[in-house]
Length: 264
Image 1 (cartoon, helix red, strand yellow):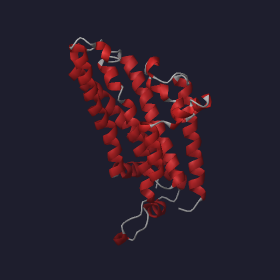
Image 2 (cartoon, rainbow, N blue to C red):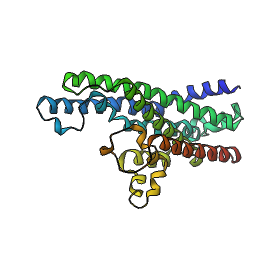
Image 3 (cartoon, rainbow, N blue to C red):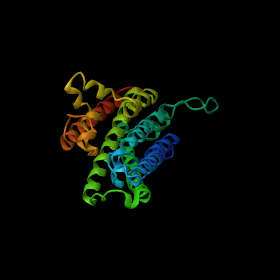
Image 4 (tube, rainbow, N blue to C red):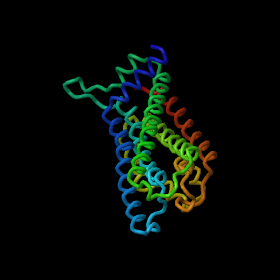
């Protein structure tokens, strides 16, 4: 099977997984739902003459404030793309794991991992293309003329691209960790908690500035949020993207080496 056919096959397989659909729903529908709540709050504050109650009244900022939520969706997609291979089938179906069948059909392990990683990139990028513009449209409809002037297209695209890159790299990191763990439970719990409940990397910055070089902290300024709304310190967007990209590449290489050498 050629690399292109392998990529298409893995993309189709990943896109039909219930877990992947759950990740896409979190990223798209979750972002839209929170944008609606945020936009209603902004409009209410502005129309009541209390704009100081909200940090920013522009529809774009109102919508974009929800973009970090998409990180959870990216994690879910990255994890299930590989963990589905290690999930045991039903007893009446033999109780085996999908990975055995997959490696029989695609014996080239590095080619398989490359195809799966590319499928994660495609799916995460796709949800970023949908979620952000849709959230901005919803915020514009709700806030309307009550908000401040809309940001420039160039600024909006740059912010969107940075956030989409953060999502994609996070999804690939989740994918690589799942390859190493051969299970989706631990990566899901740790990475989702780190992205939404409490950031362990953020806590570490209170102990050492070296924590700013961890992948999630290094890339956090890719979202381009105002300086007064983020944790002080850390790397600028471009150096941060490079550091986060290096972490991602290193983890993918390690995952590839381990996956190639060990038993399925």
